[in-house]
Length: 278
View 1 (spheres, rainbow, N blue to C red):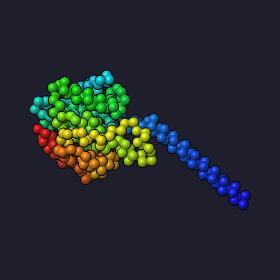
View 2 (view 1 turned 45 degrees about the vertical axis):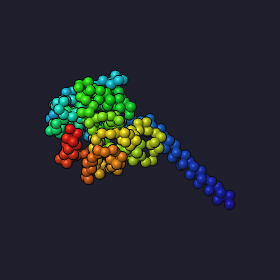
View 3 (view 1 turned 135 degrees about the vertical axis):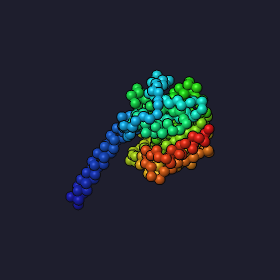
View 4 (view 1 turned 30 degrees about the vertical axis):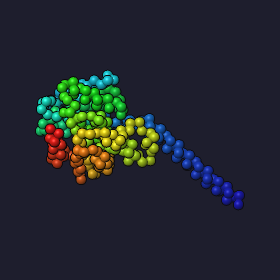
């Protein structure tokens, strides 16, 4: 009997030791993720697209923020009084050059555009944070207004992470319209999709809770999303569309991944939406 008890206790001790090391390892993983979470969220040096020739003329400018950070930006002025101006907010990875394959298509549209690089991206100083990116976006709007562009003639365009920024600054404003490409409902929900084993809600600093804000957007909205998106699940874009106020439009592609293909169907959706705002 004593032998069996000792054997049982040894097994229990072994189990407790394994459990202890498992919990300790999990704790260290949580601490590391919390400490370096912005390195996981923002990827300034990652280049998904490169090598494209710029086919549309741009003026390389610097936009100063309220906290004295200068943001490299590309500005194309076709005619600020006759055409809408697209204010383009890029995603969480790469430089302005990574968006050349997109803005080249703007050449064939009657639009002006301003493509702004976030703090910490494209050689800009500063570290990206949720509040920092909101400040960058508002500074870009102010810069456009200083050039004579009226708020009612600005079309906000958010790409991936940029959709969270566009949604934030569009609330209760009178912009011409807003375009969300591959939008998420919140960074909390997107984080849970990638790290289901972590307490994302407790750890996350930059939450980008777009689903709470979209009801405060009263301007025309176009939502674009690919059904096989393996980064931001398609259901999030669909949910954002369902929550959006009218007038609202969608371009849902059956075969697109997170980086949507700028094919004729997508370009038609873009052109039709922009033309509807005139």
